[in-house]
Image (cartoon, rainbow, N blue to C red; front, side):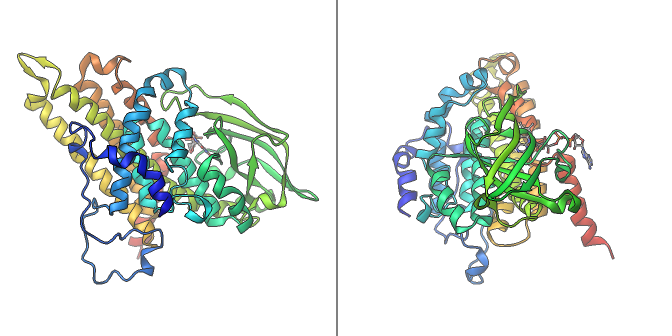
Length: 436
Ligand SMILES: Cc1cc2nc3c(=O)[nH]c(=O)nc-3n(C[C@H](O)[C@H](O)[C@H](O)COP(=O)(O)OP(=O)(O)OC[C@H]3O[C@@H](n4cnc5c(N)ncnc54)[C@H](O)[C@@H]3O)c2cc1C
């Protein structure tokens, strides 16, 4: 708990004085309830006597996380959002502060220097960051839900001792699965690993890798025995600076432009035996497991984005802009659209929180995660698009953030499984259920 206090203390007091104009639309209930979402799976706790509660209820710690990250995003990130987007780069000071706030080791146990919090807390942080900047959000998301989780779930004790304290305090992580030949068909990857006397040698190339500029820690999927097809896939830890590792190209993008997305080459990259993640030939299982969880993070990024786009426009329509002698938000035609958008945002959030709680409870959450990501990315794109229109010309110019939310929203339907891939996952589950 000490590190949670450390992580949240600097902002907790200030969060109480958060501008009322921003908080009410996003008020969270922190009821007098037991925290059902401890890091330990719920099945280890007897919950039979506890009445079910609304899915939007947060534990005190989770509510504190929401307020603290919201305050941090408003005070520290918001003033930099436009410049980082124009420069297409992440301000290193923002990354440093994410570490200082304890937001880069949310689920890492305190014994390894992390914040020792639960998965839902990570989801809340990702959502709150995206409400202000989806680029900062995805940096935090990939680091926490894919990289930290990979070591926590599959890493040897040696890897945990070596990496978790660094991942919690100063080293950004990156997850390298996609390649020029393998996107949706991720396991068709062509990067190869061969055994050497001291470990392994990796050759190949990865594409569209998030965090590659900021990261020093890379989880790399390579095939150790192509004769086994996807069952040859094995996961390795590679450090930036290892001879043969190079960033070949930084992509210029439509949205989340402050988030780095690069092509990485591996040219006879030697890694020691200890850098094997888990067991040989189990990399495909790890990738599936990690991406199933990661999708809840992307869904949270999208609900945060939708909230941010809505609130940005609502501030304008209900406070600033008058036409025909009244605020434009007073026209029923506008109000109905905004009410519809709000309803859809809350529906998406309920799906995200439900998927997160099911994961924590040790229940099967794969279909819930797919549905949450699919729907949240649809809602984000729809709301961010409508918000541009609600703001008229002011929504279209780069002076404000409306157009940026709109550009950023497109990525939700693409990474960590496109919308079609989510639909395939959902349909497979349904078919299994309904096949007689
Ligand atoms: C900004 C950004 C960041 C990224 N970050 C990472 C990262 O950190 N690590 C990483 O490993 N990867 C990353 N990716 C890669 C991302 O996961 C892939 O782009 C994604 O999986 C889609 O693959 P693709 O781009 O090759 O599209 P394709 O697979 O070529 O798909 C193109 C279209 O075909 C459709 N399609 C393909 N197969 C099917 C099918 N079976 N049924 C129906 N439709 C289908 C898709 O839905 C899509 O509409 C990132 C991508 C981007 C753009």
